[in-house]
Length: 422
Image 1 (tube, rainbow, N blue to C red):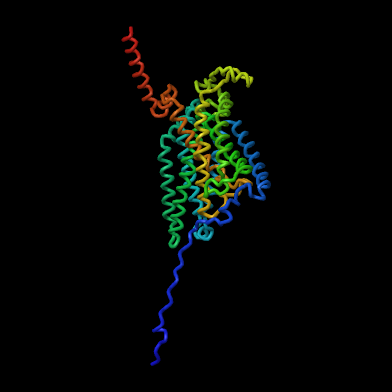
Image 2: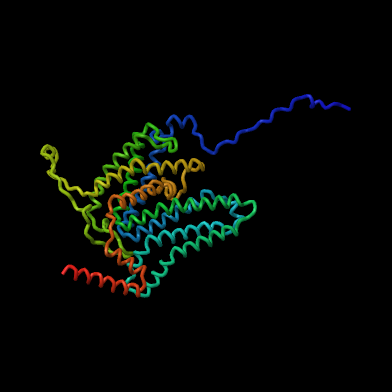
């Protein structure tokens, strides 16, 4: 029997290849700063495209703001839909979707259920205030809002059951990944954008100023980086520079102080909207928007033609908004940049030439909107109950018989106090 020659030869070692990371590793040439805008040979062409798109966006935004609260809210809804579409498509796989008919529809079911819940909570009282003159509509809407949370919950449960019933073998991982991704989108889009809508009805000022500061910061960072950028700021966003960051910060803070003085003088920007009507607003501006005059020192008037300055108290709050918009809010953009690098994409979409998708423009806006509302509610608004607020709660929560009993009881209490004083 012939002996096998391979028995005495040691088997070659089995090579094990380490799985490569999905993270894009920059080349050495990019690490040395050749990716900066100052070294980009096509930077003027890209600047013109970006500027052209920016002019159209700023013009359309100004027109919507001029139209009022409802139109601004409608704009936010459209932005939410476009953002959700871009994010839904980010992890979409056409091959798997062919085997899951109707699965995309389930994502939008959760999306509009979340929209109904968020906007129902935000606008319920304002809608009731709008239709108080029509008794039938008032009772109908009051009943719907009484069971609003239950309606949204059962809509969500219906989507949950729909998801369970559509699970298919060998598709579990993809389906559960899409389910988790959908809920993350709802948190990112609705949790943050709901603060935007709340700020709009507290006064367009508290929506317009923060949004404008983000735009100013973005434009200033681009131009300072375009002409002076030499030092890379962060690896997640290779084109960001320290020169652009610092220049944009100074520009944003100065702009915040000056814009607050201009915007704070228009009642239709500062007055809160208590209903869903679309007329012009007139109200007492409150102490924040009443100018205070300060006399300048004598040496200032020798160099400048001003002897006194007029400052609105809200301008000091605007400095805090400007500081946040210039230092903290850009981290929303850094987060988005890291997210795009993880998925090896340049932009979330291509709906805006020179800018990418809607999500690429809204990354910092979302962070800023949350801070602006929380700051306004924590440090600006006086937390007290008004007569209108209490009456609205009574009309919403009590039946007609309970309202009569309250009226009689309140009359008895007031009568006893009048007798006690006499």
